[in-house]
Amino acid sequence: MTGELQHEASPGEIGRHLRAVVHDLNNPLAVMMGFTQLMLMDGRCEGQSRVDLEKVHSEIKRVAAVVERLHAYALSLQRRGQETPADSGCGLTDGTFPD
Image 1 (cartoon, rainbow, N blue to C red):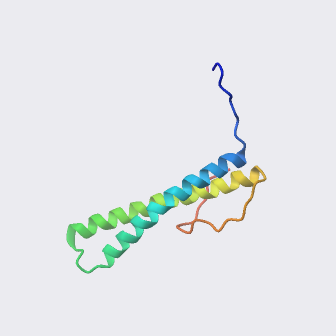
Image 2: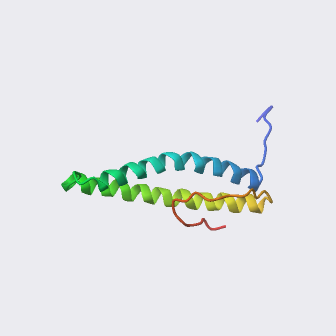
Image 3: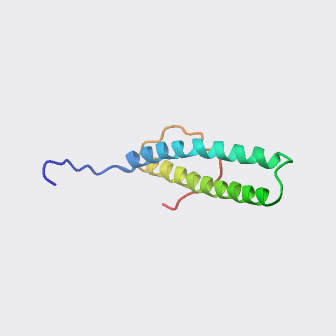
């Protein structure tokens, strides 16, 4: 690796980057969740279309749970790196990654 500077990221730096990724993932997830909820509340969604939409909504919730665990893990990395800015959480689900 001639001429390249290698940098080992601290846990705090990794946590900060992960939180940015979580933020970017949560925005479209929230929109998808909202639209599927609205469509499911609409009485015109019936039959196989409703079954399919319920499956999509369920999978969006599953992805949101993974993203929330990633957020909790990012916060734990930041704390480990002694970089703990105030945080209000993502608000989609609960869960954590193991340390």
